[in-house]
Length: 548
Ligand code: TEU
Ligand code: CA
Image 1 (spheres, rainbow, N blue to C red):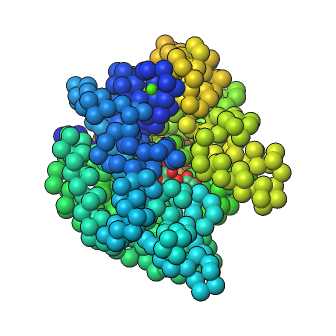
Image 2 (image 1 turned 45 degrees about the vertical axis):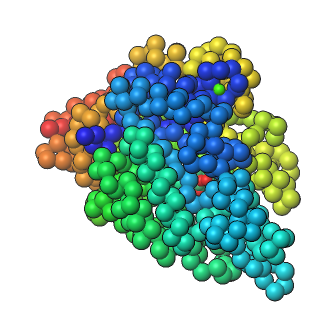
Protein backbone atom coordinates (compact mmCIF):
# COMPACT_ATOMS: atom_id res chain seq x y z
CA UNK A 1 0.00 0.00 0.00
CA UNK A 2 1.19 3.44 -0.81
CA UNK A 3 2.11 5.37 2.30
CA UNK A 4 0.94 8.91 1.74
CA UNK A 5 3.58 10.20 4.12
CA UNK A 6 6.25 8.99 1.69
CA UNK A 7 4.33 10.09 -1.39
CA UNK A 8 4.35 13.19 -3.54
CA UNK A 9 1.37 14.46 -5.48
CA UNK A 10 1.74 16.09 -8.88
CA UNK A 11 -1.02 18.55 -9.70
CA UNK A 12 -2.28 18.89 -13.25
CA UNK A 13 -4.46 21.66 -14.60
CA UNK A 14 -5.68 19.64 -17.58
CA UNK A 15 -6.60 22.62 -19.72
CA UNK A 16 -2.99 23.82 -19.69
CA UNK A 17 -1.09 20.54 -19.58
CA UNK A 18 -0.89 18.98 -23.05
CA UNK A 19 -3.15 19.23 -26.08
CA UNK A 20 -3.32 16.19 -28.36
CA UNK A 21 -5.88 17.32 -30.95
CA UNK A 22 -4.82 20.86 -31.75
CA UNK A 23 -7.88 22.66 -30.36
CA UNK A 24 -5.69 24.69 -28.01
CA UNK A 25 -7.02 23.01 -24.87
CA UNK A 26 -5.16 20.37 -22.92
CA UNK A 27 -6.97 17.03 -22.67
CA UNK A 28 -7.01 13.68 -20.86
CA UNK A 29 -5.10 11.98 -23.66
CA UNK A 30 -2.47 14.64 -23.17
CA UNK A 31 -2.06 13.51 -19.58
CA UNK A 32 -1.76 9.87 -20.68
CA UNK A 33 0.86 10.92 -23.21
CA UNK A 34 2.95 12.56 -20.50
CA UNK A 35 2.75 9.87 -17.83
CA UNK A 36 6.34 8.83 -18.42
CA UNK A 37 7.44 12.36 -17.66
CA UNK A 38 5.59 12.28 -14.33
CA UNK A 39 6.99 8.85 -13.61
CA UNK A 40 10.49 10.19 -14.30
CA UNK A 41 9.88 12.97 -11.78
CA UNK A 42 8.85 10.32 -9.28
CA UNK A 43 5.36 11.45 -8.26
CA UNK A 44 3.02 8.83 -6.78
CA UNK A 45 -0.31 10.57 -7.37
CA UNK A 46 -1.70 12.91 -9.98
CA UNK A 47 -4.31 15.37 -8.80
CA UNK A 48 -6.27 16.63 -11.80
CA UNK A 49 -8.46 19.70 -11.38
CA UNK A 50 -12.07 19.08 -12.53
CA UNK A 51 -12.67 17.75 -16.04
CA UNK A 52 -16.39 17.06 -15.63
CA UNK A 53 -19.06 18.54 -17.86
CA UNK A 54 -19.03 22.26 -17.20
CA UNK A 55 -19.70 25.58 -18.90
CA UNK A 56 -16.11 26.43 -17.83
CA UNK A 57 -16.90 29.80 -16.27
CA UNK A 58 -14.43 28.87 -13.57
CA UNK A 59 -12.46 26.36 -15.64
CA UNK A 60 -14.41 23.36 -14.43
CA UNK A 61 -14.98 24.37 -10.80
CA UNK A 62 -18.51 25.01 -11.99
CA UNK A 63 -19.67 21.42 -12.44
CA UNK A 64 -22.74 20.76 -14.52
CA UNK A 65 -22.62 16.95 -14.41
CA UNK A 66 -20.45 15.05 -11.95
CA UNK A 67 -20.83 11.74 -13.78
CA UNK A 68 -19.55 12.69 -17.20
CA UNK A 69 -16.44 14.09 -18.76
CA UNK A 70 -16.48 17.40 -20.55
CA UNK A 71 -16.03 16.61 -24.26
CA UNK A 72 -13.38 19.33 -24.41
CA UNK A 73 -11.21 17.09 -22.24
CA UNK A 74 -12.17 13.78 -23.84
CA UNK A 75 -14.37 10.79 -23.13
CA UNK A 76 -14.91 8.22 -20.41
CA UNK A 77 -12.80 5.83 -22.52
CA UNK A 78 -9.97 8.37 -22.40
CA UNK A 79 -10.32 8.49 -18.64
CA UNK A 80 -10.25 4.71 -18.38
CA UNK A 81 -7.20 4.54 -20.59
CA UNK A 82 -5.46 7.16 -18.45
CA UNK A 83 -6.37 5.21 -15.36
CA UNK A 84 -4.97 1.94 -16.77
CA UNK A 85 -1.78 3.54 -18.05
CA UNK A 86 -1.22 5.34 -14.76
CA UNK A 87 -1.69 2.12 -12.84
CA UNK A 88 0.89 0.37 -15.01
CA UNK A 89 3.37 2.97 -13.86
CA UNK A 90 2.38 2.80 -10.21
CA UNK A 91 0.74 6.23 -10.36
CA UNK A 92 -2.64 6.86 -8.80
CA UNK A 93 -5.24 9.39 -9.82
CA UNK A 94 -6.70 11.97 -7.45
CA UNK A 95 -10.02 13.48 -8.53
CA UNK A 96 -11.20 16.95 -7.62
CA UNK A 97 -14.68 16.95 -6.08
CA UNK A 98 -16.45 20.31 -6.06
CA UNK A 99 -19.30 19.91 -3.61
CA UNK A 100 -19.73 23.33 -2.06
CA UNK A 101 -21.51 24.45 -5.21
CA UNK A 102 -22.57 23.30 -8.67
CA UNK A 103 -22.76 25.15 -11.94
CA UNK A 104 -25.95 27.08 -12.51
CA UNK A 105 -26.27 24.88 -15.63
CA UNK A 106 -26.61 21.76 -13.51
CA UNK A 107 -29.88 19.86 -13.85
CA UNK A 108 -30.49 20.35 -10.15
CA UNK A 109 -30.24 24.11 -10.36
CA UNK A 110 -32.24 24.27 -13.57
CA UNK A 111 -35.05 22.34 -11.89
CA UNK A 112 -34.79 24.62 -8.88
CA UNK A 113 -35.19 27.68 -11.09
CA UNK A 114 -38.19 26.03 -12.72
CA UNK A 115 -39.80 25.98 -9.28
CA UNK A 116 -39.33 22.30 -8.35
CA UNK A 117 -39.36 22.44 -4.53
CA UNK A 118 -37.26 19.32 -4.14
CA UNK A 119 -34.42 20.90 -6.07
CA UNK A 120 -34.92 24.39 -4.70
CA UNK A 121 -34.08 22.78 -1.41
CA UNK A 122 -30.76 21.57 -2.86
CA UNK A 123 -29.65 25.20 -2.84
CA UNK A 124 -29.87 28.17 -0.51
CA UNK A 125 -32.72 30.50 -1.44
CA UNK A 126 -33.67 33.32 0.94
CA UNK A 127 -35.92 36.35 1.02
CA UNK A 128 -34.21 39.75 0.86
CA UNK A 129 -34.37 42.33 3.62
CA UNK A 130 -37.41 44.56 4.07
CA UNK A 131 -35.48 47.45 2.53
CA UNK A 132 -34.95 45.52 -0.69
CA UNK A 133 -31.33 44.55 0.00
CA UNK A 134 -30.00 41.00 -0.28
CA UNK A 135 -30.49 38.69 2.74
CA UNK A 136 -27.03 39.48 4.17
CA UNK A 137 -24.11 41.72 3.29
CA UNK A 138 -21.81 38.78 2.50
CA UNK A 139 -19.35 39.18 -0.34
CA UNK A 140 -18.59 36.71 -3.08
CA UNK A 141 -14.98 35.55 -3.13
CA UNK A 142 -14.87 36.64 -6.73
CA UNK A 143 -16.17 40.13 -5.97
CA UNK A 144 -19.60 41.72 -5.44
CA UNK A 145 -22.54 40.42 -3.40
CA UNK A 146 -22.74 36.72 -2.61
CA UNK A 147 -26.49 36.80 -3.40
CA UNK A 148 -28.24 36.79 -6.75
CA UNK A 149 -31.83 37.91 -7.12
CA UNK A 150 -34.31 35.56 -8.82
CA UNK A 151 -37.38 37.57 -9.89
CA UNK A 152 -39.77 34.64 -10.31
CA UNK A 153 -39.39 33.76 -6.60
CA UNK A 154 -38.65 37.26 -5.31
CA UNK A 155 -35.79 35.50 -3.54
CA UNK A 156 -32.02 35.38 -3.69
CA UNK A 157 -29.70 32.40 -3.95
CA UNK A 158 -26.30 32.20 -2.27
CA UNK A 159 -23.10 31.96 -4.32
CA UNK A 160 -19.88 32.28 -2.34
CA UNK A 161 -18.02 32.16 -5.66
CA UNK A 162 -19.20 33.27 -9.11
CA UNK A 163 -22.88 33.96 -9.77
CA UNK A 164 -22.76 30.84 -11.98
CA UNK A 165 -21.75 28.72 -8.94
CA UNK A 166 -24.78 28.43 -6.62
CA UNK A 167 -23.97 26.95 -3.18
CA UNK A 168 -25.44 23.57 -2.29
CA UNK A 169 -27.53 23.18 0.83
CA UNK A 170 -25.69 20.53 2.85
CA UNK A 171 -28.27 20.73 5.62
CA UNK A 172 -30.51 18.82 3.23
CA UNK A 173 -29.81 15.08 3.67
CA UNK A 174 -30.70 14.45 0.01
CA UNK A 175 -27.82 16.67 -1.07
CA UNK A 176 -25.46 14.73 1.16
CA UNK A 177 -26.68 11.48 -0.40
CA UNK A 178 -26.13 12.87 -3.89
CA UNK A 179 -22.51 13.76 -3.22
CA UNK A 180 -21.85 10.40 -1.57
CA UNK A 181 -23.13 8.78 -4.74
CA UNK A 182 -20.75 10.83 -6.86
CA UNK A 183 -17.78 9.71 -4.77
CA UNK A 184 -18.94 6.09 -4.92
CA UNK A 185 -19.32 6.28 -8.71
CA UNK A 186 -15.68 7.34 -9.12
CA UNK A 187 -14.55 4.79 -6.53
CA UNK A 188 -16.23 2.26 -8.81
CA UNK A 189 -13.89 3.43 -11.57
CA UNK A 190 -10.92 2.56 -9.36
CA UNK A 191 -10.10 6.06 -8.14
CA UNK A 192 -8.00 5.91 -4.97
CA UNK A 193 -7.63 9.57 -4.06
CA UNK A 194 -9.87 12.61 -3.79
CA UNK A 195 -9.40 16.30 -3.27
CA UNK A 196 -12.41 18.13 -1.89
CA UNK A 197 -12.73 21.71 -3.07
CA UNK A 198 -13.36 24.40 -0.38
CA UNK A 199 -14.89 21.67 1.72
CA UNK A 200 -14.78 23.62 4.98
CA UNK A 201 -17.38 26.04 3.57
CA UNK A 202 -20.18 23.49 3.14
CA UNK A 203 -21.86 23.96 6.51
CA UNK A 204 -23.48 27.36 6.68
CA UNK A 205 -24.25 28.86 10.05
CA UNK A 206 -26.41 31.85 10.75
CA UNK A 207 -27.46 34.07 7.88
CA UNK A 208 -26.65 37.41 9.46
CA UNK A 209 -24.93 40.59 8.41
CA UNK A 210 -21.24 40.61 9.13
CA UNK A 211 -20.51 43.97 10.77
CA UNK A 212 -16.76 43.47 10.73
CA UNK A 213 -16.05 41.47 7.58
CA UNK A 214 -17.23 39.86 4.39
CA UNK A 215 -19.32 37.09 5.94
CA UNK A 216 -16.74 34.33 6.00
CA UNK A 217 -17.01 33.88 9.77
CA UNK A 218 -20.57 32.62 9.31
CA UNK A 219 -19.78 29.81 6.91
CA UNK A 220 -16.09 28.91 7.39
CA UNK A 221 -15.59 25.73 9.46
CA UNK A 222 -19.35 25.96 10.07
CA UNK A 223 -21.45 24.35 12.80
CA UNK A 224 -21.93 20.88 11.23
CA UNK A 225 -18.71 20.66 9.27
CA UNK A 226 -17.16 17.78 11.20
CA UNK A 227 -20.41 15.88 11.26
CA UNK A 228 -20.82 16.20 7.48
CA UNK A 229 -17.24 15.17 6.76
CA UNK A 230 -17.51 12.17 9.05
CA UNK A 231 -20.69 11.13 7.34
CA UNK A 232 -19.21 11.51 3.85
CA UNK A 233 -16.22 9.47 4.98
CA UNK A 234 -18.32 6.70 6.54
CA UNK A 235 -20.71 6.51 3.59
CA UNK A 236 -18.14 6.62 0.79
CA UNK A 237 -14.33 6.80 0.65
CA UNK A 238 -13.88 5.63 4.26
CA UNK A 239 -15.01 2.19 3.13
CA UNK A 240 -11.76 1.69 1.23
CA UNK A 241 -8.72 1.96 3.51
CA UNK A 242 -6.41 2.57 0.54
CA UNK A 243 -8.08 5.82 -0.44
CA UNK A 244 -6.38 9.06 0.51
CA UNK A 245 -8.10 12.43 0.71
CA UNK A 246 -7.18 16.06 0.98
CA UNK A 247 -9.51 18.89 1.88
CA UNK A 248 -9.02 22.41 0.64
CA UNK A 249 -9.57 24.51 3.76
CA UNK A 250 -10.30 28.11 3.03
CA UNK A 251 -9.45 30.60 5.85
CA UNK A 252 -9.54 27.76 8.35
CA UNK A 253 -8.18 27.50 11.89
CA UNK A 254 -5.53 25.06 13.04
CA UNK A 255 -7.84 23.74 15.75
CA UNK A 256 -10.33 22.64 13.12
CA UNK A 257 -7.54 21.08 11.05
CA UNK A 258 -6.44 18.96 14.00
CA UNK A 259 -9.75 17.25 13.58
CA UNK A 260 -10.11 17.36 9.78
CA UNK A 261 -6.77 15.61 9.30
CA UNK A 262 -6.28 13.74 12.55
CA UNK A 263 -4.67 10.34 12.32
CA UNK A 264 -7.89 8.59 13.38
CA UNK A 265 -9.12 8.53 9.77
CA UNK A 266 -12.62 9.70 10.64
CA UNK A 267 -12.50 12.73 8.35
CA UNK A 268 -9.65 13.32 5.85
CA UNK A 269 -6.03 12.25 5.34
CA UNK A 270 -4.69 15.79 5.11
CA UNK A 271 -5.49 19.45 4.55
CA UNK A 272 -4.43 22.38 2.45
CA UNK A 273 -4.34 25.60 4.45
CA UNK A 274 -3.44 28.97 2.96
CA UNK A 275 -2.27 31.27 5.73
CA UNK A 276 1.36 31.03 4.62
CA UNK A 277 0.31 32.25 1.17
CA UNK A 278 -1.30 35.40 2.49
CA UNK A 279 1.95 36.98 3.69
CA UNK A 280 1.84 39.32 0.70
CA UNK A 281 -1.81 40.26 1.31
CA UNK A 282 -3.21 42.99 3.54
CA UNK A 283 -5.05 40.79 6.04
CA UNK A 284 -7.42 38.81 3.82
CA UNK A 285 -7.28 41.38 1.02
CA UNK A 286 -5.37 39.95 -1.90
CA UNK A 287 -5.77 42.76 -4.46
CA UNK A 288 -3.06 45.01 -3.03
CA UNK A 289 0.71 45.32 -3.45
CA UNK A 290 2.43 44.43 -0.21
CA UNK A 291 5.95 43.02 0.05
CA UNK A 292 6.09 39.45 1.37
CA UNK A 293 6.62 39.33 5.14
CA UNK A 294 9.30 36.68 5.67
CA UNK A 295 8.97 36.69 9.45
CA UNK A 296 5.27 35.93 9.12
CA UNK A 297 5.86 33.26 6.49
CA UNK A 298 8.22 31.36 8.77
CA UNK A 299 6.06 31.81 11.80
CA UNK A 300 2.97 30.47 10.06
CA UNK A 301 4.71 27.50 8.46
CA UNK A 302 6.46 26.59 11.70
CA UNK A 303 3.35 26.99 13.83
CA UNK A 304 1.41 24.71 11.50
CA UNK A 305 4.26 22.22 11.42
CA UNK A 306 4.62 21.89 15.16
CA UNK A 307 0.93 22.34 15.95
CA UNK A 308 -0.26 19.67 13.54
CA UNK A 309 2.52 17.29 14.65
CA UNK A 310 1.55 17.67 18.32
CA UNK A 311 -1.96 16.58 17.40
CA UNK A 312 -0.86 13.80 15.08
CA UNK A 313 -2.53 15.64 12.20
CA UNK A 314 -1.19 15.80 8.65
CA UNK A 315 -0.46 18.78 6.37
CA UNK A 316 -0.39 18.97 2.61
CA UNK A 317 2.79 20.92 1.75
CA UNK A 318 2.76 23.35 -1.14
CA UNK A 319 3.79 26.70 -2.54
CA UNK A 320 1.93 26.49 -5.82
CA UNK A 321 -1.40 25.51 -7.29
CA UNK A 322 -3.71 26.74 -10.01
CA UNK A 323 -4.92 29.61 -7.78
CA UNK A 324 -1.50 30.90 -6.74
CA UNK A 325 1.17 32.87 -8.54
CA UNK A 326 4.37 31.01 -9.42
CA UNK A 327 6.58 30.62 -6.36
CA UNK A 328 9.88 31.48 -8.03
CA UNK A 329 8.40 34.84 -9.07
CA UNK A 330 6.80 35.30 -5.66
CA UNK A 331 9.45 34.38 -3.08
CA UNK A 332 12.49 33.71 -5.26
CA UNK A 333 13.76 35.57 -8.27
CA UNK A 334 13.32 35.22 -12.02
CA UNK A 335 16.71 36.70 -12.96
CA UNK A 336 20.28 35.87 -12.02
CA UNK A 337 19.44 33.40 -9.25
CA UNK A 338 16.41 31.83 -10.90
CA UNK A 339 17.75 28.31 -10.62
CA UNK A 340 19.23 28.65 -7.13
CA UNK A 341 16.13 30.30 -5.70
CA UNK A 342 13.73 27.78 -7.26
CA UNK A 343 15.74 24.91 -5.82
CA UNK A 344 15.97 26.54 -2.41
CA UNK A 345 12.20 27.02 -2.29
CA UNK A 346 11.69 23.40 -3.28
CA UNK A 347 13.97 22.18 -0.50
CA UNK A 348 12.27 24.35 2.12
CA UNK A 349 8.86 22.85 1.42
CA UNK A 350 9.79 19.23 0.59
CA UNK A 351 11.76 18.52 3.75
CA UNK A 352 8.90 19.56 6.04
CA UNK A 353 6.53 17.14 7.73
CA UNK A 354 3.55 16.49 5.42
CA UNK A 355 2.79 15.37 1.88
CA UNK A 356 4.30 17.61 -0.82
CA UNK A 357 2.34 18.75 -3.86
CA UNK A 358 4.11 19.88 -7.03
CA UNK A 359 2.07 21.98 -9.42
CA UNK A 360 2.75 21.42 -13.13
CA UNK A 361 5.72 23.48 -14.28
CA UNK A 362 6.86 24.27 -10.74
CA UNK A 363 9.46 21.51 -11.22
CA UNK A 364 10.78 23.50 -14.19
CA UNK A 365 10.88 26.83 -12.37
CA UNK A 366 8.08 28.27 -14.51
CA UNK A 367 7.46 31.95 -13.80
CA UNK A 368 4.46 34.30 -13.65
CA UNK A 369 2.58 35.00 -16.89
CA UNK A 370 3.79 38.57 -17.46
CA UNK A 371 0.52 39.61 -19.13
CA UNK A 372 0.22 43.29 -20.01
CA UNK A 373 -3.29 43.47 -21.45
CA UNK A 374 -6.66 42.47 -19.99
CA UNK A 375 -7.46 40.59 -23.20
CA UNK A 376 -4.78 38.06 -22.23
CA UNK A 377 -6.50 37.19 -18.94
CA UNK A 378 -9.02 34.36 -18.78
CA UNK A 379 -9.74 34.01 -15.06
CA UNK A 380 -13.16 35.19 -13.89
CA UNK A 381 -11.71 36.39 -10.58
CA UNK A 382 -8.99 38.46 -12.28
CA UNK A 383 -11.35 39.96 -14.82
CA UNK A 384 -13.87 40.91 -12.11
CA UNK A 385 -11.21 42.50 -9.92
CA UNK A 386 -9.63 44.41 -12.79
CA UNK A 387 -12.92 46.27 -12.98
CA UNK A 388 -13.51 46.46 -9.22
CA UNK A 389 -10.06 47.96 -8.62
CA UNK A 390 -10.71 50.69 -11.17
CA UNK A 391 -14.20 51.28 -9.75
CA UNK A 392 -12.43 51.89 -6.43
CA UNK A 393 -10.39 54.63 -8.10
CA UNK A 394 -7.14 52.87 -8.99
CA UNK A 395 -5.55 53.77 -12.30
CA UNK A 396 -5.52 51.18 -15.03
CA UNK A 397 -1.77 50.77 -14.74
CA UNK A 398 -1.99 50.19 -10.98
CA UNK A 399 -4.73 47.62 -11.56
CA UNK A 400 -2.43 45.86 -14.03
CA UNK A 401 0.45 45.87 -11.58
CA UNK A 402 -1.73 44.12 -9.00
CA UNK A 403 -3.00 41.55 -11.51
CA UNK A 404 0.54 40.82 -12.66
CA UNK A 405 1.44 39.88 -9.09
CA UNK A 406 -1.73 38.19 -7.82
CA UNK A 407 -3.75 36.86 -10.75
CA UNK A 408 -4.53 33.16 -10.78
CA UNK A 409 -3.69 33.16 -14.48
CA UNK A 410 -0.03 33.47 -13.48
CA UNK A 411 0.01 29.75 -12.93
CA UNK A 412 -2.42 28.80 -15.68
CA UNK A 413 -0.26 29.49 -18.73
CA UNK A 414 0.45 26.29 -20.66
CA UNK A 415 3.03 23.80 -19.54
CA UNK A 416 6.36 24.47 -21.23
CA UNK A 417 7.42 21.23 -22.86
CA UNK A 418 9.91 22.39 -25.49
CA UNK A 419 11.48 25.54 -26.89
CA UNK A 420 9.35 25.26 -30.01
CA UNK A 421 6.28 27.30 -30.88
CA UNK A 422 3.75 27.48 -28.05
CA UNK A 423 6.20 25.66 -25.83
CA UNK A 424 5.22 22.42 -27.54
CA UNK A 425 1.88 22.54 -25.71
CA UNK A 426 -0.35 22.64 -28.77
CA UNK A 427 -0.16 22.74 -32.55
CA UNK A 428 -3.19 25.05 -32.53
CA UNK A 429 -3.89 28.34 -30.78
CA UNK A 430 -3.56 27.96 -27.01
CA UNK A 431 -6.61 29.01 -24.96
CA UNK A 432 -4.30 31.25 -22.92
CA UNK A 433 -0.92 32.62 -24.04
CA UNK A 434 2.23 30.62 -23.51
CA UNK A 435 4.95 32.43 -21.59
CA UNK A 436 7.59 33.55 -24.13
CA UNK A 437 10.31 32.26 -21.80
CA UNK A 438 9.35 28.74 -22.90
CA UNK A 439 12.23 29.18 -25.31
CA UNK A 440 14.63 28.67 -22.42
CA UNK A 441 12.51 27.30 -19.58
CA UNK A 442 11.12 23.97 -20.77
CA UNK A 443 11.01 20.29 -19.91
CA UNK A 444 13.16 19.11 -22.80
CA UNK A 445 15.98 21.42 -21.75
CA UNK A 446 15.74 20.46 -18.09
CA UNK A 447 15.58 16.74 -18.64
CA UNK A 448 18.86 17.09 -20.56
CA UNK A 449 20.66 19.10 -17.87
CA UNK A 450 21.95 17.26 -14.87
CA UNK A 451 21.76 20.23 -12.49
CA UNK A 452 18.30 21.43 -13.55
CA UNK A 453 15.45 22.40 -11.25
CA UNK A 454 13.61 19.31 -12.52
CA UNK A 455 16.37 17.03 -11.25
CA UNK A 456 16.40 18.83 -7.91
CA UNK A 457 12.69 18.07 -7.47
CA UNK A 458 13.33 14.51 -8.58
CA UNK A 459 15.94 14.13 -5.83
CA UNK A 460 13.67 15.62 -3.17
CA UNK A 461 10.85 13.27 -4.10
CA UNK A 462 13.19 10.28 -3.92
CA UNK A 463 14.69 11.45 -0.61
CA UNK A 464 11.27 11.34 1.04
CA UNK A 465 11.14 7.66 0.11
CA UNK A 466 14.71 6.89 1.12
CA UNK A 467 14.91 8.77 4.43
CA UNK A 468 12.36 7.90 7.08
CA UNK A 469 13.31 11.07 8.92
CA UNK A 470 11.77 13.18 6.14
CA UNK A 471 8.54 11.24 6.09
CA UNK A 472 8.10 10.54 9.79
CA UNK A 473 10.46 12.76 11.78
CA UNK A 474 9.62 15.38 14.39
CA UNK A 475 10.32 18.96 13.48
CA UNK A 476 12.14 21.66 15.44
CA UNK A 477 12.34 25.16 13.95
CA UNK A 478 15.78 26.78 14.23
CA UNK A 479 16.48 30.51 14.56
CA UNK A 480 12.81 31.41 14.38
CA UNK A 481 13.56 35.13 14.50
CA UNK A 482 16.42 35.23 11.99
CA UNK A 483 15.53 37.74 9.24
CA UNK A 484 17.13 35.79 6.38
CA UNK A 485 17.55 32.16 7.35
CA UNK A 486 14.91 29.44 7.01
CA UNK A 487 16.26 26.48 8.95
CA UNK A 488 14.84 23.51 10.77
CA UNK A 489 15.76 20.16 12.22
CA UNK A 490 14.00 16.84 11.72
CA UNK A 491 14.61 13.84 14.00
CA UNK A 492 13.53 10.22 13.87
CA UNK A 493 14.87 7.11 15.61
CA UNK A 494 18.48 8.29 15.76
CA UNK A 495 18.47 10.01 12.36
CA UNK A 496 18.84 13.79 12.14
CA UNK A 497 18.27 16.09 9.21
CA UNK A 498 19.23 19.76 9.15
CA UNK A 499 17.65 21.91 6.45
CA UNK A 500 19.45 25.23 6.08
CA UNK A 501 18.34 27.89 3.63
CA UNK A 502 19.38 31.41 2.84
CA UNK A 503 16.00 32.79 1.76
CA UNK A 504 17.46 35.87 0.04
CA UNK A 505 19.82 36.94 -2.73
CA UNK A 506 22.37 38.41 -0.28
CA UNK A 507 25.21 36.44 1.23
CA UNK A 508 25.11 35.74 4.94
CA UNK A 509 27.24 34.18 7.62
CA UNK A 510 25.70 31.92 10.19
CA UNK A 511 27.17 30.33 13.27
CA UNK A 512 25.38 27.00 13.15
CA UNK A 513 23.58 26.34 16.42
CA UNK A 514 23.91 22.55 16.04
CA UNK A 515 27.15 20.63 16.35
CA UNK A 516 27.84 19.49 12.80
CA UNK A 517 30.11 16.60 13.68
CA UNK A 518 29.09 13.52 11.74
CA UNK A 519 26.79 15.29 9.29
CA UNK A 520 27.10 14.92 5.54
CA UNK A 521 25.52 17.13 2.91
CA UNK A 522 22.97 15.08 0.94
CA UNK A 523 21.53 17.89 -1.18
CA UNK A 524 22.38 21.47 -2.06
CA UNK A 525 21.93 23.99 -4.85
CA UNK A 526 25.59 24.91 -5.39
CA UNK A 527 28.09 22.32 -6.64
CA UNK A 528 30.47 22.89 -3.73
CA UNK A 529 28.29 23.53 -0.66
CA UNK A 530 29.99 22.57 2.60
CA UNK A 531 28.76 21.81 6.10
CA UNK A 532 30.90 24.09 8.25
CA UNK A 533 30.29 25.27 11.78
CA UNK A 534 30.61 28.86 10.58
CA UNK A 535 28.59 28.86 7.40
CA UNK A 536 28.98 31.37 4.64
CA UNK A 537 25.81 31.06 2.67
CA UNK A 538 25.74 32.39 -0.88
CA UNK A 539 22.59 33.88 -2.49
CA UNK A 540 19.69 31.48 -1.92
CA UNK A 541 22.11 28.75 -0.87
CA UNK A 542 20.34 25.71 0.51
CA UNK A 543 21.80 22.65 2.21
CA UNK A 544 20.34 19.44 3.56
CA UNK A 545 22.61 17.78 6.11
CA UNK A 546 22.10 14.27 7.41
CA UNK A 547 23.48 12.19 10.26
CA UNK A 548 22.64 8.69 11.37
O1 TEU B 1 -10.49 27.69 -4.53
C1 TEU B 1 -11.03 28.25 -3.39
C2 TEU B 1 -10.49 29.51 -3.00
O2 TEU B 1 -10.67 29.87 -1.87
C3 TEU B 1 -9.73 30.28 -4.04
O3 TEU B 1 -10.43 30.30 -5.21
C4 TEU B 1 -9.56 31.66 -3.58
O4 TEU B 1 -10.78 32.13 -3.08
C5 TEU B 1 -9.17 32.48 -4.73
O5 TEU B 1 -7.91 32.09 -5.14
C6 TEU B 1 -9.28 33.90 -4.34
O6 TEU B 1 -8.08 34.48 -4.07
C7 TEU B 1 -11.12 26.60 -5.09
C8 TEU B 1 -10.47 26.26 -6.40
O7 TEU B 1 -9.14 25.87 -6.16
C9 TEU B 1 -10.59 27.42 -7.33
O8 TEU B 1 -9.91 27.24 -8.53
C10 TEU B 1 -12.05 27.64 -7.57
O9 TEU B 1 -12.24 28.78 -8.35
C11 TEU B 1 -12.83 27.80 -6.27
O10 TEU B 1 -12.50 26.81 -5.30
C12 TEU B 1 -14.31 27.66 -6.52
O11 TEU B 1 -14.62 26.34 -6.82
CA1 CA C 1 -7.38 19.28 -26.85
